[in-house]
Length: 332
Image 1 (cartoon, rainbow, N blue to C red):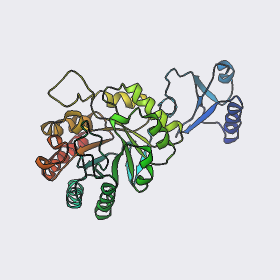
Image 2: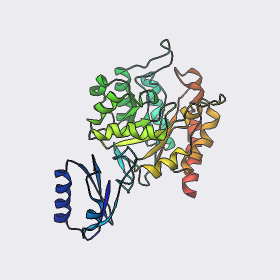
Image 3: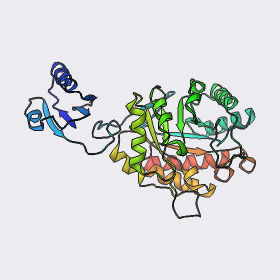
Image 4: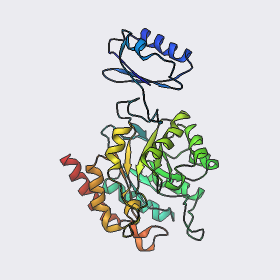
């Protein structure tokens, strides 16, 4: 249930109303905007008399919410959430580009890439230290050493770090990481999500291979219900019958998610298509669709990359993509 308060409501009136709701056994989510205050009620609201609430002087409107996701719901929080990712803001009109290699392979590789993507205009460095791979024989990442190298690259360039976690036992290793990424395969690893919900780190939550938008939002709800509301959603393509691309890039999810939730939405054209030639047009399209950020794979020598070389851009290619993205943003 959502109660929208009039802008004339005083702090004392609001506090009294919130206290009454809590006495009814409800959890209260209060969102203060520029023009009104929205109170979201979580729990059994069947005993709440809507007509009684609507009769209060400070109430503008009361609505029952049918969607199972509450904290992530835009109805509970009409204004866009802006998340501070190590000094880089995402959401609410702030745009970011996360770029870097699929896997951290060596000190030279990650430092070279970090410098190149920063020079081209990227605002964050992405790179995998722990790598979930379909085959157990593929490169699994440098793990703890990879995180050390990412932090060294941050020290050199100043770029905040985005990197993926696979196990809740690894959370202490991510203490100095700016954004913890939950990959598509772990989108419904609910124990991991709940553990990340007990941190205060920004969480980049990727949509599962065959997940609906509702399922993605429910996974975000797992994190937020534990207290961490710094969640960023990521559309990275879903599995369909198509075989020419790695996945099918669901561009419609970007504006649809903006309608459903106040959380920022990132687009990942690299994993969505799996083809280097498609990164530029899909990056432009995602930007035009309203993505709050892009995540793009860049490698100094894609043909020798330990993973996902076919979808990685060279630094020069990435520079060209950034120029096109900026043109689209200029039009918007």
